[in-house]
Length: 151
Image (tube, helix red, strand yellow):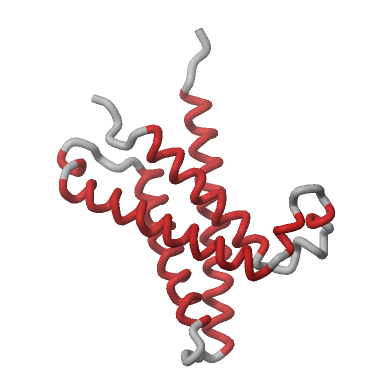
């Protein structure tokens, strides 16, 4: 039985998550501090508003992709394909990232205000969840590599 998710969808997910990782990291003031902007072609990473808008674009693309996949899962795939432990973990991390990202978007609206402590907690949770998603991807790659037997 072939996997339900095509290579195109898998690559779209990888590219969107990579965009979100780069632009999310550059939202912190590290591009100029660590001279990343001095590398030819990477000066745009120091423009906060550009990376901010690109992060929102990536988030919209991720929401569209997740909505598509969740709908297909509920309507078609769940009868024939079970989620692996890595799949369940990834789904949970992406759902939590979307939730904390939504709170961060609310925080950025002009007429919405939260006290600093919960916002700091949400900010750190969002960053930590993104780190865990990357770590999970590396663990999955390691698990796949250890299962492949040389001929």
